[in-house]
Image (cartoon, rainbow, N blue to C red):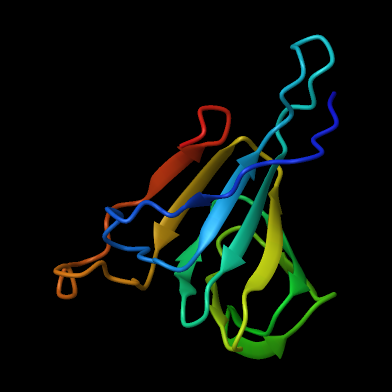
Length: 149
């Protein structure tokens, strides 16, 4: 168990060929408490999506909840696309394609919650890094939130 009262945002890995977001940053959080009082199997991601950036269409093998705190975004969830703003909560079932685009002229601030410290992701579309525009998406992979990668 823990209180996290501050955290540091990091830029997205510019070497990721599928999710190139040069104006965005994130913080990946899990309970840093000791094993005796640790809340496990919950991950929270805080993101700032820069103007013109987007999270490409993708799927996870687990559920996700996204809360929008600030900014204007266009969210695709399955076959539906909506413009959303602060206060919007999006519940995303496992396996449903989804993505988010900053559709405004300022940062989109949001946070996503997952019921696991292992977050599988498979990109269905790409934000190609320069020089990789014609490549196919990379195979599905898993982020280990405890390891920070």
